[in-house]
Length: 487
Image (cartoon, rainbow, N blue to C red; front, top):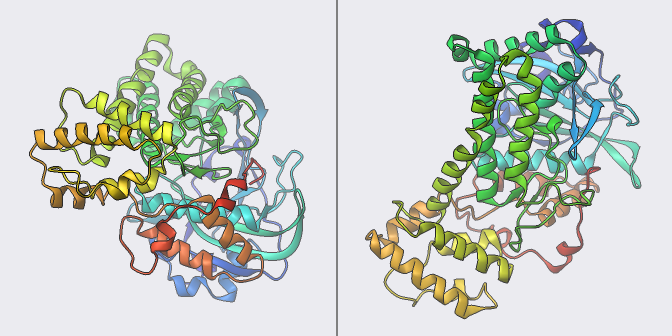
């Protein structure tokens, strides 16, 4: 099945016209396929090989629209860096529609498809650089088991796009059950449109949370469920060392999925205060702040839903689930990362002690946890690969003895523990330098590295002989890389 024959519907188009603008994508000349995710293709019942055909490429870039597609750009608003930004909307994204799958509906959206009424000062386009980053990170996060939107493809064109320099254009096909955001609700609340606010909430509940309709107050139940999902998602981010970079309310999914990959980063040398977004002058979205910002964003959503919930007390009760949900989930994830099968007194101190020495030594986060599985509970004979990660080796030795004692307290088996730890501590993550190498090759029409990374990151926990160099330390030049909101 070619992309032009995908069986589209568009439930979002069933909402009143105030929610969107119908429009066609703006064509790009001489498009060519840069990347395709076979697993994402199969998710919507499409044959990956068929999607590589010239006809499909025309559809995936927006030059041709599938017969049943109803393209539109949605309106929303939001808080950006904590400040109310007013109306935003799909400034460079066009929703093609949704496709029924065994797991539920999946929307397909073109990012970089041209000007919309919500483009403001933008050109409606995306560049090859940012499109490759979004494609790779979407699929990498899925491989890590973190809730995320997916990326089906990247199609490029040699048409010039002005950013800090002249770059070439590209379009990413993004996939998610819905692209509705916290800011979608804020838009109607701050514009004092209670009827539209209720229509949107009812649409979300009926389509994505139907079980909540039976609750005494479905809108409070919606806020509580979204709050829970957001807390769990961010716990996953923290556990794997992922930084989003732009946690504005218009970049927060109503389904608790990671959405809108821009200046993201995975932690190299551990620094809790690391800021991955060069545009974030005050560090609002630093790694350490992400849990707090997730809670703040849920408060922003709660404010928008308050007219529907009706009672401040119910709203607060829904929000109160955030902190215990985050604490419970991050505790489970960190126990798994340390290979601890039980919870015992003193575990908090053990974890705090670990993160203190990781911070003091700027130890590589991913490499440390992957190597930790090789530590022996009985003696320090195998500690050298871990000790080598620390400048202050006596500090590590002291922590390692406490960790060994903790492992012995639950009769931990070295072999079984390593197997379990290797399933939660990835060997491969999408470091910025890896994406940069792929981008530079792609800019010269060599897409082999994009394909190689996409395949690598589908199985981040596997050993993958022959790919070990991707699991090593980042090169020194990677320290000079910076990403910003334009990324």
